[in-house]
Length: 204
Image: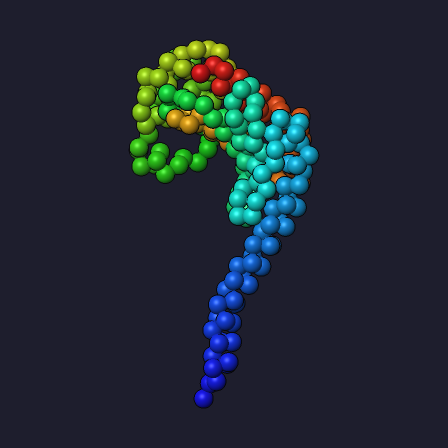
């Protein structure tokens, strides 16, 4: 017959075992995140920002650029993904649409037909990107009617950005790459990306 002490120890072991597993996973993720993203701590001050390194969260640099809050998030590469850089510029934006580079695999919303294409009067632009809008088609067309806006978007696409989304919270730019691995990212490259993204925001 189980003694009271044995019963208490068994109950405590049943409680502590999952906590120990969770704690071990937490520490592994923490050190892996810190190791992969330690370079961000060095370049963040050069971007007028700070590195955000937390377990279970995507490594990022956040700060202020051209008067707007920004967040550069670095998604690690996986078995079927090369990794991704995402830049968010926060500011009120009345237009809601997305520009994607030609050849990108369509998303679920596109496959289900929930977003419709917006064409502009420039064959070279339409040949390079697809513009999708689930609302505010007129605002998207008006923004893209400006040759300067189209030219800047094409420059971003030439630099490897596959998606530019205009949302109510701001502009989100995505670029594939192993930025936490061997490819890495330099302060110069990060500043270049911020500069182009900032120019895009200025034109809205």
